Length: 285
Image (cartoon, rainbow, N blue to C red; front, side, top):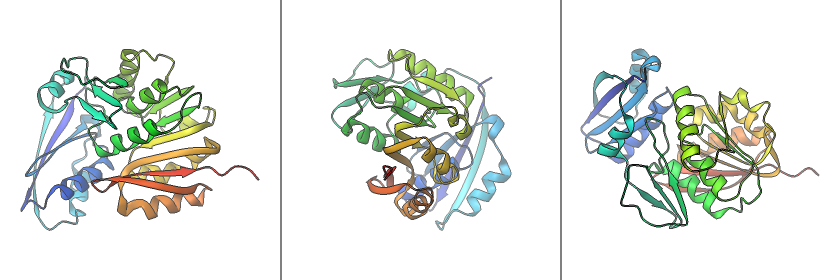
């Protein structure tokens, strides 16, 4: 059963949007998948099997903003998550004036060069979060035609789908959460790109995958820095790596981990303090 724990966190006094963004990032480090911020706090969702009250308490104890956090946790039984997103959260968006992201239940859809259908259920990645839209924007600007690509932590599959639409091949997507992996397979089929290989697994699943010319990962700082050596091993010389899921303040930590395994810093883009870091694999001399 696809059961979740819904955790409501109210911040008093409310420090502002930066606080809820940071709180979402910290909760992502302990397995939380989806977040709905508002003017008083954030509602966060984690798979019931992954919910750990002690880990949550420890995370909140490290929260740097000076405020009280009221916590209310409730178990939510499996339901039609598409209906939930339609009623509450997910509206069509346009990224970079070139790409529209919407669900199969939407009817009022803006026209765009790339039309992506995402039925997200509870998997992360509809394009609404800054980290997803930052990588989407980078992929829209890159020449992907005929270039191989790996999408690590694919979530809904949105990044892999756009890459395939823009001519990338082969495209491999990897997702650690079984339910999210099934959702990605469904979204890949919805968009007519069954050639995308969606693999269930963590970074160890990269080992049999051929190195690619483009490698993207939208996860979080701790996972990225812990697995960066595996990512670098699957990026061809001259290849491009796009990393997101962390804040501008985290760039020195991520950059140091990347440079330690031979990757070179290129640039970064930013939105609401979230960043997309671009790296490259040096060509052999």
